[in-house]
Length: 226
Ligand SMILES: [Zn+2]
Image (cartoon, rainbow, N blue to C red; front, side, top):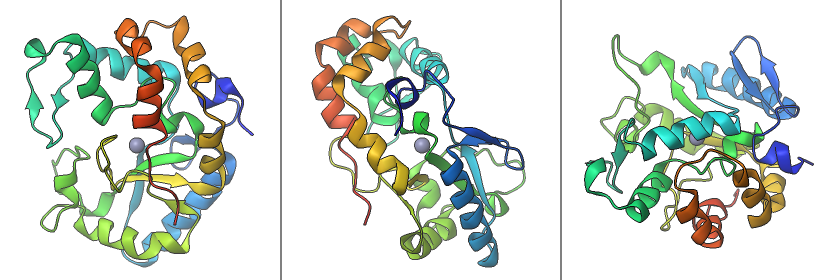
C-alpha cells in the first residue's frame, strides 16, 4: 500500500534505483520490467525506459514550464498551440491533455514507464513520444505492434490507449497492474488537494476551482487492465 506522500511523489521511499537501467521503479515493477526487456530482446526489440519514477518536483517543473510558455503546448491533434493567445483556463486544459498535474502523475507510483525501441531510433533522431511515431510509417511501429501482441501475456498494460476526453492516447506508457490498480484506487481528490496546497504549482486558483472534475477526467479516466 502506498502512502499519500508516495502516491503524490513527495516521497521516494517506495522506489529503488535500477542501476543497469538508470531509472527508479517500485521493486516488483523493476523485476517485471527486466523480464519484459528480456522478452522483447528475444523478439528483436531493444526496450528502453526513457522515463519511469518522477517526483512531485520534477512534475512541477514540467507543469510550470508549460504554464509559462517555456515548453511547447499541443492541441488534441498534436499541433503546437500559441501560448500567448490562451486564457488561463485554456492553458490549464492544454497542459492537462498531455501532462499530469503534479501529484496526479502515475509516474509518481514507480509502477509506470514510457518506453521506446532504442534499436529502431535512427542516428541523430530526437525521440518525441508522439502518436505519429507509433503509426504504420513511424519509427516505433514495430514496438507498438509487439506491445499489442505480447503485453497481454504480462502484468503490464497500457492505461492511455482508449482516449475518452481525458489524457491523449499514449501507446508508449506502460503500467505494472499488480501495484498500479491499487494505487489508483487509493487516490482521492483530498490527497491531491493536500499535495498541491503548499506547492509552487502555477495556476493553482484555476486548478482548485475544478479539482474534482480534473480528478475524474484526467486521473480516474483511464483504461482498465484487460
Ligand atoms: Zn508516461
